[in-house]
Length: 56
Image (cartoon, rainbow, N blue to C red; front, side):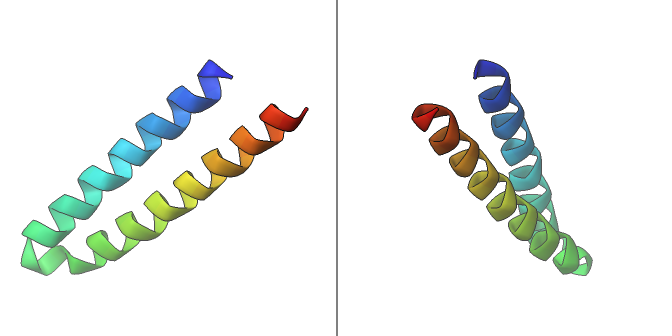
């Protein structure tokens, strides 16, 4: 379980960094959008995996 949480946290931090970088650099607004989408997907994936492991 710890390995799944570690991967989700690392990916979430990477996506968050990309989102902030995209927001700070005007020409990279698309990077902010991609970062937000990937961050949301990673959080949802981690939440689903966490719920599945707690049940089983």
